[in-house]
Each structure stands twice: as C-alpha cells, then as structure tokens.
Length: 310
View: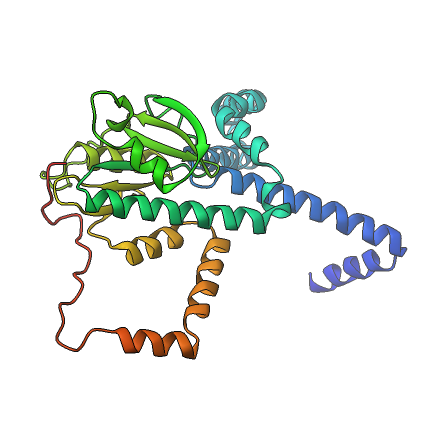
C-alpha cells in the first residue's frame, strides 16, 4: 500500500513543471471554494441541513454498497433533485454569500478597522443609555440573515455612531423606533424599530423581561449577537447562542464583543492593549490607581440571577 502511494507520488512529480503547477492550482482552487462555502454556511441553520444532506448521501452509498435495493432506489430519486433542494433551502445564504464574496481576502484590514469602530460606537452608546436608564436592543447580524426571523422596522442604512444609536432609543410618542431593536448589517445601521422573536425556553429566569427574552430568542435561531440595555437597573448584557452575560461595564463589554467577532478585530484589540502597556502608560495608570481597600467591580451575573422585568 505504502509502495503504491510512493510510486503514484513519484509519477506525479516526474511530469513537466507546468503540468505539476497546473494540477496543484486546480486542487487549490477546489479547496478554497469548499472553504468559502463552509465559511458562508457557518453559524446558520443551513449548516445543520448541510450535515443532514451529507449523512443522507453516506446512507445512499452504504445502501448501494450492501445491495439495499429499495433504500438505494428511493435515495437515488431524492438525490436527483438535490440541486433544486439546495437552491430552495439555502437561497438566503447563497445570496448573502455571493453579496459578500471577495470582501475578506482583499479588504481584510479595512473591514477589521470598520468592525472595530462599530464595536466602539456601540459600547459608547450602550454605556450612555445605561447611565440614563434608557432601554435598548442592538443586534449585530453576522453570517445568518435575519430577514426571516424579525418583523421589519424602519430602514435607515446609516453609519453607526453613538449619537444615532442614542437618539433612536430615546422614549417618546413621536419616536416609534425606540420600541424595538436596532440592527447592524455589514457595519451600518440597517434598520431600527424591528421586533424579535421571543424565546420559549423554560430554563430562563422568570424575572427576565420582554427585551431580554427577545434578545435570547433571536440568538437561539441565528448566530447574531445582541447587546441589551436595561432601563430598570441601567445594566448592560450581551446575548449569543441562546446565552446571556449580564451586568457588563465598558471594558468587559468590549472583551465579550471582541471575543465573539472576527479574529482580525481581536488582533487589533491586542495591538491597542500593547500600545497601552508601554512603561509610560503603566506608570501613569499606577499613579492614578485607587488605594487598596477600594470597592471591587462586581462580576457579571449569570443567567440564573434575578433581573428586572425590562
């Protein structure tokens, strides 16, 4: 077996240089294509369906191998229309992937800078809203499109800024957008006043209000990340993958968001921290640090701790 593989590899590289480069390029193109398809499906329900289709194909091969005529015939008829099934089931994800195709490899630095700026603006707005005891819901759309999971609000298509986010959530009869979620798509404010699906999980704390349940409900269905500001207690929480992390300050909120988002943003945040850890910066912080015995910053609460109804 090893000798046959060795002979095949030797025969492959004994050909002309152009032929070898041609075949290697061919393999790389296919590998990169598969990688980006998986990247496009990551974090979506389509990924679960892809796993099911792969399992179905494995059963088809097994039925053919072991002579299970009925199972093989049935699956053969199903797989004949597989292309149409994939197009119908994955239509939103295919459109999303084609829209974003090419952004990552060619504009990585610009995209990382944009994502970092958006996170900064959201953190500033969330802290200001919490200070003023104004409730808010800010949704980061990621790989999974949210169109089919939300009730569409007012389309804005505006740049993300602390001032815009703050003004959207100011409670007023003349501001219908405040009673809903603000959704960020591709680094811009896509819409405001959107309504999210509520979670039906019986494990959640019953004191969690509609705002928190809506945030958790959306993250149970998609890979979105939701920042929640409570108007009752002036606290900030983050919801992701059906989980909630509560009572975050600005630094902890940044740490959670950066940890949930792209690796490039994480690298930029590390670079920023390194620039702040120079000897001069450390000496400056040490001189302005409070004396021992001060009040410690409370740790974030878990989902099981009581919270306000908002």
